[in-house]
Length: 452
Image (cartoon, rainbow, N blue to C red; front, side, top):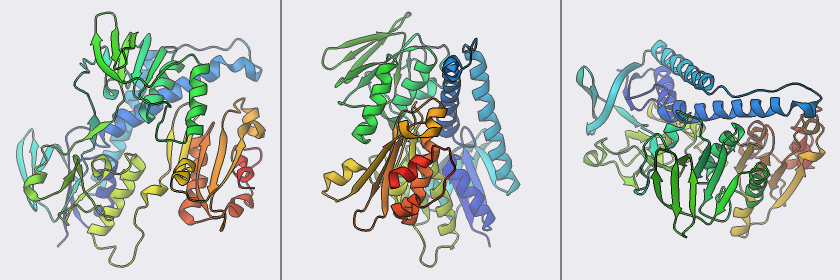
């Protein structure tokens, strides 16, 4: 008899696990209360990148005179952008739903919770549906964190979910939080023509990233007129009919037309009945092992609630690995997920991407490394595209030459990092990159130059 695989949450982790488990012969039921494809994915990740793409196109057109073009200009149609974002989300949700249904996955619209070790209840519009499960996957994602002082109204004081896109284009946006999400919002709204102030609680933006990378982004922000308030921690926010006032703990006050909270997220593990069935939580996240199993072996967790890297790529890989493990495909030695080798990108301008060991982390533990770096100002394709900002940095083991990590700042960094990510995952040497024949002219040539 086929195993009954019940999945609560239809984001990247849930739908990937569903498709693989169905292929392996499982009977799969998925419970999703909102969007098939994931609210975080379709209402955060995809819309933000669509907005950034529009802003980049706007900037390219309006700077076209530098490429030898004249009488070229463009203005933003915010309503058209809103329709485009909606259309992209609808298409992705429809394609994901079609794929799941074609594989026999049963989709239930509603909320799910565990009521016993192998019992799940789905609360739908038609009433309660009781399900017996051999395997349960928890993939319920996360929601924006809102501090007590922030009186979010969805009009003037916004969370990320209110701003993809907001109802009106902010005249002056105050962004609170300088992590990945915060700096992407700074970039996109500055590219739309808004004035932007970024409240930075520490002494650099992107506090968890390479200081050299953060400095490059800060320099670009300042050159574009972004106001940076470093060492400032927001403590109160007041909205009026005309704008917002944000107070900081050190007495500084910032005013603007809108304020945006980008200060992290909270895992959606409440109301799932996990405590009653013995699933252990750590600070609200499900504690998992290398197979993504919780403290209850047949209950797995993936995506944001697993406490690992909150990336769609990580969630999808977790989903596949869970399906393989639960269906018995990992009876022998197999490759576990190495979260330290996950590539990530920040879609600012210039783009930022990194993977593997960071230079600052190596120095912190006294590890010997070799760092090689080349600027894009020496790259022919960067000059042709009239954007030579940034650099490629490769980190390797000085004894063996094995690539340990890397960082890229510049155009197409999110694509170029894949080469270094492959080298890190496969244990390639810098010589392997240096001896590769890449296209000329291309931005990728900077990788071989950095490996030289």
